[in-house]
Length: 341
Image 1 (cartoon, rainbow, N blue to C red):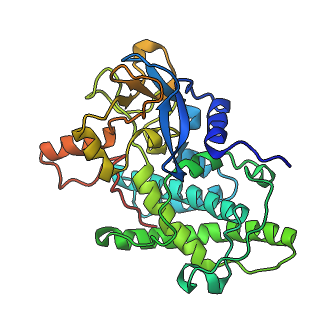
Image 2 (image 1 turned 90 degrees about the vertical axis):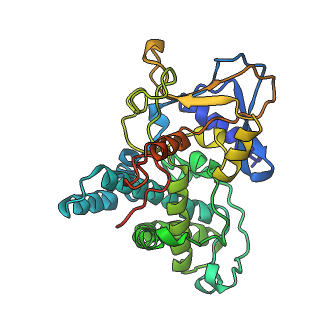
Image 3 (image 1 turned 45 degrees about the vertical axis):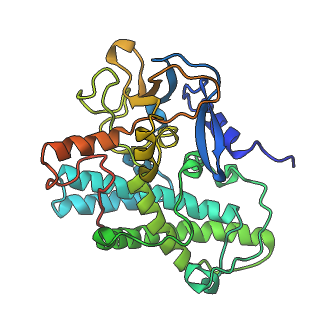
């Protein structure tokens, strides 16, 4: 069949179908084709909306709990956590991050089958990384897998490199425990995706548990890095933090938001260079919008300008540091929140 639209355009189509308002920006490949960036599609005046994401497009723990492949297992884990007395805000955020990571990992192992990155036990990450021959798989978007509604969002996130199963020392224990549990959840998903693909190619293979384990670690690190806590209102940085519309107060993976903020290591340099030109927040109640998150230009922008938004997650951490609260456990939406099974 004819090739589908390129990945950035596919992502835009998915956003439009989901009801995101994003006419003012285009999704483009960033440097390497694996990553996306946002540029203005035309001239934009200061204060104008660059994009707005509805609550229905937030990937939250509630969405994960309804997932048909892993939702039931996640519900069981959540119940066990409650029974063990894990009911604090930090415990809740920990579980939410874990649930997001499980969705990422489940999506990734299914997509792994699609992308022909399938590896035998002996060719996994630990076995020299030999890959099996690439198979042509027409079903790029995964429609046949049925209801894999979040694949475009998952594909837009900055996945750690295949080799990067390395974890900062302070978080190693929690990440390892959480990842082991996620690997167990996604292994059956990986196996069925694997069987579907190998049956089509006439080769029967066993799935690689090493791959599931590494994917689980990557997914957990990515969820910790990519999740956003609920935003402040755009008209008051110190206002109540919650998602607009019916988005609630938990952490979420939010389409477009991850493309508007820079990775931590680049953000400080961009701020110092005066390159930040946008702000993220909840639409003001007075606007009558039910959007969960809006991005506005903080100055006039020409067409084709790279959108770089201030990261309100950093502002939360800075405010806490100034108040001398570094010793407190991380609050919802902090990037360092860890998870234990």
